[in-house]
Amino acid sequence: MSVAATRACAHPRRHRGFTLIEMLVAVLVLSIGLLGLAGLQATGIRNNHSAYMRTQATFLAIDILDRMRANRDAAIGGDYDQALTDGLRSSTAKLADADVNAWLSELAQKLPSGDGSIARNGSIFTVTVQWNDKRNDQDLLSFSTNTEI
Image 1 (cartoon, rainbow, N blue to C red):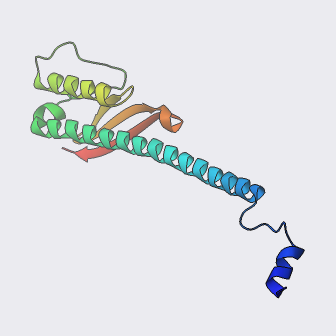
Image 2: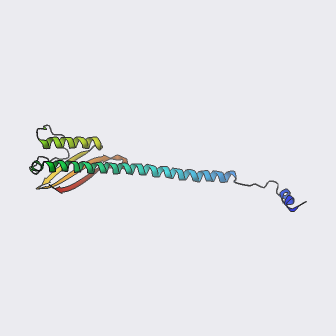
Image 3: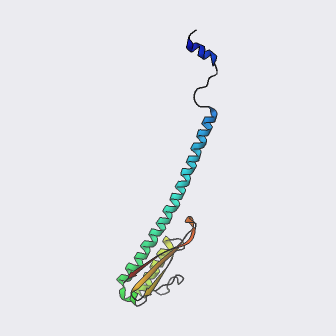
């Protein structure tokens, strides 16, 4: 008998490859890794949505500032002044009233619980946009910008 045949007879039940326990451990490690990736994906989507809301707030603040620059005399005269809780204006006879109503409607449409205010101090204006960001575990967020018209 050769040496190879002797070794084969000495260990007839010798296992080759993975055992069942090794496979279960590998599946467990892979599952934990995939759960971690799913968590990262969910966090990324939530943060991306929050960034989208901030971008919308920035664009809407710039929008009303552009409208005010186009109607500078009315803006400096106080026609665009708006508090957060004032809501839509009843009259749209003036261009400023129509601009503010259109702006507030866009805020409500594009941002959850979106609202805005315009404060004037001489020719310096502060535009504040406020919205609800519950997806990011924060109730109210706001964006504020100052400019001179």
